[in-house]
Structure formats: C-alpha cells, structure tokens
Amino acid sequence: MNSVTIFGIGGIGGYLGAVIGSRLPALDLTFIARGKHLEAIRNQGLTFRRDGHSDTLARPARAVDSSGNLGVQDLIFICVKAYDLEQACREIEELVDDHTVIIPVLNGMDIHTRIRKFLKKGILLSGATYVSSYIEKPGVIRFQTGREVFVLGKSPDCQDFNPSGLLAFLENAGVPFQWFDDPRPAIWRKYLFISPYSLMGAWSGKTMGAVLADPQLNSMVQTLQQEVYAVGLASGVNLTEDDVLDAQAFARGLNYECTTSFQRDFIDPSRKNELDLYGSAVVRLGHSLDVPTPQMERISRDLEKKREG
Image (cartoon, rainbow, N blue to C red; front, top):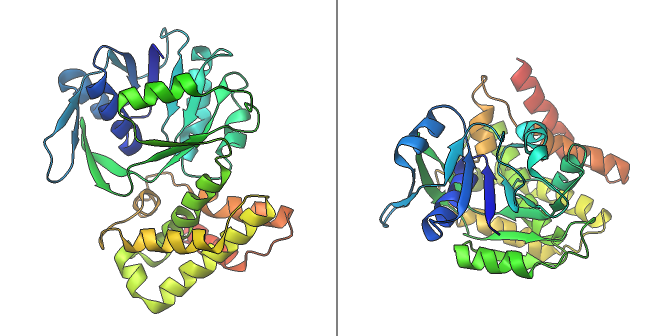
C-alpha cells in the first residue's frame, strides 16, 4: 500500500489519519477535508488529543479539498456521513481501478449496497468501528470514548480477495483492527448499538447515561434492539441474544454525558442527518422480509415530524 487516501477527516477519518500519519510519516498519504479544518491541517498538521496522553501530530503528504489529480490509489478509506456518501463515491471514482481497496467506515448495515450504486470498480470491503471521536476545533480531533477497534472483512463481490497485504499494512500503520471473512455479524453488532441509541437520544433529547437511567426510555431502546435483531436474523446474519446484551453493556460503559453524532446533527436544523440510515433502512428491510418493526416506525415518524416542524 503505497498511496492511501482518507476521504473525510472528521472524528473517524481524523482518528485514522492521526494514527497512520504519525506512524508512517513518509507514506504517500492524502487527506480530503473541507473549510477551516482543511486550512488548519495544511498550516499546522492534524492534532489528535485524548485525556491523559500527549498530543499526536500527523502531517500528510497532502491535504486537499477534492480528489482531482491524485491518480489511482492503492487504498481509500471513506469516512463520511451517509448523506454525503453519493458525493464521495462520485469524487473518488477517478482514483479507483480494479485493484484499489476501498474501506468504508460508516455506521450502517447496507453501506455496501449504497456504495455499489455509484462506484462499480474497486475491491470494496465492509467496515465499521466503535471509536468515538470528534472535531474539537479546526485541525484538532478529540477522542471521546469507545472501543478502539476497526472491524473489516470481505463483502459479497470480493470473496476471492487475499487480505494479507492489507492486513500487514494496517498492522504496520498501527490501526487497531479485527478481520472477518464474513463481517456481517460484526457490522450488525455495532448496528444493534448505534441505531437504537442514536434514535432514542435524538427522540428524547437526553444523553446516553440519562437514557439508560430512565426505565421507560431504556425499555424503548431494548424494544428497538429486538426489532433490529429480528431483521438481522431474517436477513441471514448469524446474530445471538448475547449480541444484544453486549450492545447494552457497551452503552453502559460509555460516559454519562456521551451523545451520538446523529443526535448532535439532529438537534441542529441547519445540518443534514442520518435518520434514513438508522431508522428508515430498518423499516424498509423489515417490510421486505415480513418482519414487523412497529417501534422503529413510530420513532422514525416522530423524528421526521420534529424535523419538519
């Protein structure tokens, strides 16, 4: 992996950029970012901060606002929100040939399908992460909480892909990862957490800790999880009840004041949000599989009305 691009230097892309860029300073590494964040990275590099640790500084080979003139890349990380996914795919199309490895690090259980609507070439893997980071200020990424691991694996149209070279690169770059030949269970396990808690946080306006401390809200979250679990099983994903319990345990281990990025986006009327990714996608898939999702439908409708109002 000689040429690597990270498209989107927000919380997750910034985490990856800081890890890879600081570990491999001579790598042909490109950050694609926007606005004041991009300007700060160009002027002073990308700083990564976490409580109790010294700052990490990464200076990529280049920081740009578009993919023009970069040439074909060996590896591309897509680290954008779902509402920017189509634009990202169209922008990186010229960077991709049949040998380019593409790793989307987005929350969602249908990301592969969404990407393949717009990007036909490349070795498209599946990925997710439990890392929670955010842009503290332009040029600075702050680690918030979560398990520091990226899960990735083969997607339906790349079953013959040999990952040995990729995995050696990730290990050398210091990226914490777990590889799965079938990553669907791991991706759905993350979805069992992120979808219900994101929706309930936005619906209630409360932090993660406050949702867990409220018996009614906590019960509603658990109902949402059971609906997601049922849809996942009907989709042929090998999930167990222990996966649901693990998602609940993960939430209990987070900071009381923790909120999800969806919740933070939702409360700002000027921002786009990922309600389709976390709510409507489950409802649609449930309908197609004859799996009822009444709680998910109700919460999704309520959130749609809140935005419209």
